[in-house]
Image 1 (cartoon, rainbow, N blue to C red):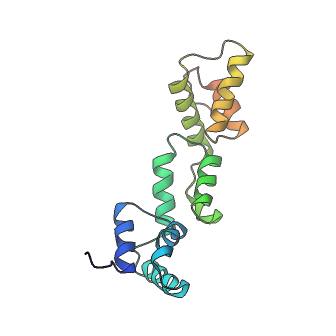
Image 2 (cartoon, rainbow, N blue to C red):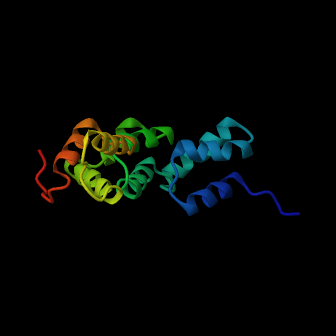
Length: 152
């Protein structure tokens, strides 16, 4: 029979795989903690020793997901993972790079501009599902197929 892992060892195992938000780590470790106070003490110690950081997690998550999704979806995903709104906002892409991402996603999914209103609505719905705001969608649909890099 294997000896029981300590709470600290379990936390390090989780953090060794990928960056994790404090809320996610707390949720994953809660079944193994004897008390809430023990868990909070451990989490505070991990933050103090810089082994866990919501800033690092947000930056890492946005870096990997921002090539496929817009600001709205990224912000919503980070909030679901327990990252504060201010922390999430500080790492979100700017408007120009978001438009470039929307155009890239649009061109990858649809090989040609919309031929009619129905197709344009389909493309707009696709971008909205990916988390792009209305202004970004309109700009991408309007200028995304002309090859230009000038955004309004």
